[in-house]
Image (cartoon, rainbow, N blue to C red; front, side, top):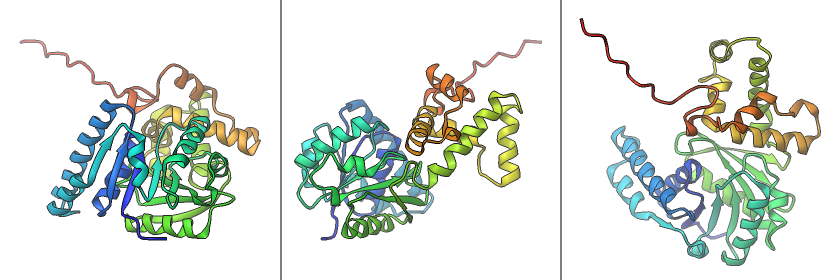
Length: 294
């Protein structure tokens, strides 16, 4: 497979913008596509700010940072991705929506292009079934936030070719990432282990074993984790955690993966975590009460 020169990224949220930033700072031309112009504007601001932080910390040169911003192109037109060597989707974690997107991409991407999904749990084999190029479909699961986290989890579908795997692994390594390879089973490696732990933390809170602060402190200081499982759930997004637990429960057929009722209730209430300002914890700015005059 020829060397990759252009990357298409679909979805201008935190994951998509982070993947686009990685590609641009590593010398690739990037098309970042989203139907929402406001999302593209927010992504541009976030990428620019992040690149500037990397420059100020000496992690990349100013020249590399400036070049990255020049390489980044934004679009609301999916047809602009037709020149990409690989297209990575980072849209909502819904199998039906992703399958429709893959079907559309199959019709517009050049014949040699790889179609990759940043899904954290959905079957790559089933996504590939929506295309006529299942050998060129693969999972490329970045951790959040992509410019910082060192791991990329690569998932081979039933028909993913060795050539597609090698090309995708090489791209991740070009980004400076450590890669692990998973077979195509629900949750893959990371979320197969991580999400049940988060779900159990919710059960621990739900049944009154301890406060949310003590649950998180216990796991941080007792197991040397950088943040507690409930804090991490808020960072990931409680809706994402619930979606993955549902995939695990359905895909593996074991009741131990049933989502905790408290997690379901929080999502139903719109308490989705940091992105909404309220999840397990309250991130909304509290009004400042003026000090009484003496």
